[in-house]
Length: 387
Image 1 (cartoon, rainbow, N blue to C red):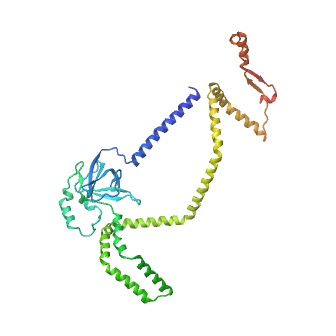
Image 2: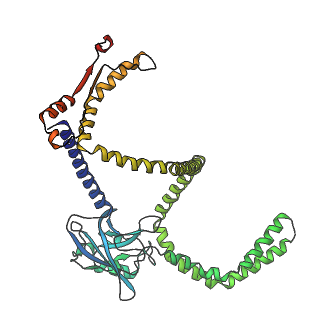
Image 3: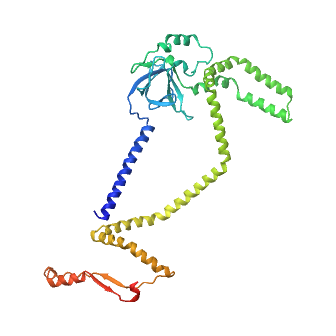
């Protein structure tokens, strides 16, 4: 095996190893990001009053660890949702197990959380963290943890053991009666009078109190509407109260993040400006270089075609073999100063006779002459050529 074949074999081996490693890493990343499981999984279902925001492919988690995925969310009975999901066989579910729809991140993505005991599920709309209602007591007495039975494949978790996610639409709709009761012009008028009195621009305390009394009377007349607002918000506030610790941590983290951004605002602004300048320069460079690159690629194709010929390949291989020796000689010659002295000490070349016809070309005399001309060499006997 010559040097060229050896280099080709080594390069091919490296390419094969790199390809195998790349395929394994890509498959591993696809398995992790795509929630692809390799163990046995069991199909279960869970009945929710509402499964808003939950969709096919969302994670199913136990204690924060992904154990499966949601397969489908279907309407059943016209007033509730049936969620079908698949989890690892090693995760046991019983008639006492609970299911909750939780928020995965701030953009609204959700996931299905499973608990071994439905009594540990978070309060949902209409539930409170205080005294337990009669219905919940009845449910917990019917299915005690000690009497829980394993769920069969395809069996559903009852709606009494499931909790939907917080409905933000219900939160905003809760304020709707208050918004309808108050007239914007009344609020604006009260604010204007208050500003004028405080600035001494006109008006009296009496008029301010009159406006305040008018607004207070309007609110008193709409106490039923305000009561409706409080009733509508009680469900949402109970759920928010159950997550007050997480909400406080989130606000603290956001505060720290905004402080860091404010501290680095100048650096961020300069970076954005520099990126814009770099983009402009790069676009101009590509526009200017494109015609030359196109021409170079066209000429490179022609050069490769010439070098691909067998005779030229042999000549190129021979040139590359002699290149280290030639470069060493050039370095020695250039050490005398900022110039090069070249002397023609030897000259090797060959001469190809033109065709004289098949008869003459194959004659012994012509062949002998051509053989002599295939390797013509001249050598100098000068002292400088003996170095």
